[in-house]
Amino acid sequence: MGDRDPPTLQQLAIEGLLREEALAISALEVMPPMLLPAMFEVAFKNRQTNVLRAMVPIWPFPYLPVGALIKTPHLETLKALLGGLDAFFKQMDCPRKGKVRVLDLTTTDSHCWSIWAGTYEGDCSQQVVRHEQQPMETCHDSGMKNNLKVVTELKLVDNDTKEYATHLVWWAEKKKDSIHLCCLKLQIWEPCISNVIEVLKSVDLQCIRELHLRSLWIDDMAAFGPYLGQMRNLHTLVLEGITNNFRMDESQGLEEEWISTLLSQFPKFHCLQHLYIDDIYLLVGCMREWLRSLKKPLETLSIKYCHLSQADLDHLPQCLNLSELRHLHLSSLLLAECLGPLGLLLERVKATLQSLELEKCWLEDSGFRVLLPALSQCSQLTKVNFIDNNLSLPLLMQLLHNIAKLSKLTQELYPAPLECYDPSGLVLVHQFDQLCPELMAIIRTERKPKKVTFATRQCHKCFSCSIYELESRHCLCSQ
Ligand SMILES: [Zn+2]
Ligand SMILES: [Zn+2]
Image 1 (tube, rainbow, N blue to C red):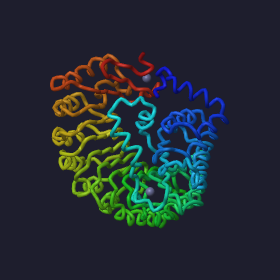
Image 2 (cartoon, rainbow, N blue to C red):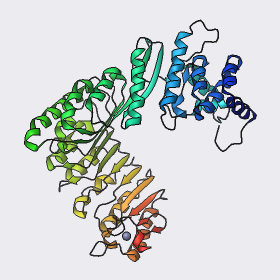
Image 3 (tube, protein in one colour):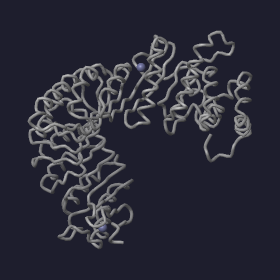
Image 4 (cartoon, rainbow, N blue to C red):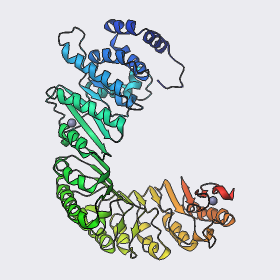
């Protein structure tokens, strides 16, 4: 049911019925099963928790993909759904017992709601079979020793998400003999580590595919060790802003303890494919240890707001765990001067690399030039981002000549050439307007550009950038 489509007669009837909540609930007993999804969808949007609580126990399909209907997690709605599951277990002898086996709070795929609402335009038959008869296999426990699975992601980020997560974990804990709480993604941004540990104790750590740890103190990290090692199906690990609240001399031991705890868990992540490291000062000089501890080649390596020493860079092309890399994102980095090893790494991954971001690395011509030969061979690239590097017009022209032949590129971001700035760093608008189309023309000689952007550095007067895509947009003070 698209929001802009005129309402169908069925929809109008359902909305009318839902205005009389008691009547709607009593009508559920006699309502044809195929009408229930449309009614559920409207009741969900209206947050009619009494109706939702009554509908879950008689849900006529094994799969209830409510995640596709959730815009913002709402605690009262969650309580109603879980209350519905409680009722489902109690009424074992009810003549109209529902079939729900999986309550999925995570899915964003709204196909089955479209099919149920009769608005799906694809091949419905296959989709109906998949969604109605085979709930998604989401975890290692798909054999389901338990009767029912609740698939979720948990965020411990702010008071609302903490309350939502805590309630769900508390409810599942009470029912753990009959419910499998399947947490696919765990996001933690929580200075109070004891709350986190409570959640970690209550969820099945082997189900977790994605873990985000953000803004934590270094002395809290050691407590994670035993739990990290049990996340054996983790495929994405995001570590962001692990900070130090101790004086340097006191924290030395803690830092070493955390690093050795973390690295000793890495070999247990047999599925890890995507590693994001953001603002972790402890990475400096340790790249070799981090990458060597991995068990399997990475698909994504993203490092932001860190410092990579020459020793770190030197190790990159030798690392077997980077040989099948598809996404290399190095942004806002202080990079060592000699970028030769980065060129060698590009050479190694030329057959697999799909996106390359070297944003805000402040590289100059001499550093960047060593990347060019390898870059022109990365034939699978679909995205490049080189914004906020200090490159001259001749170097950019050479780069674009090299890259113009890469026919799979769909998104390209380049810095405006140094010739576009006056000595104080302000943008010379006339130069910018003249040079960017000339650079774009180089790409056009080989292929039709899809999305190409040239951007200046942030203007130090108005804090905006000048952008050239198909036409120029100047920073605020040049307009
Ligand atoms: Zn699971
Ligand atoms: Zn400006």
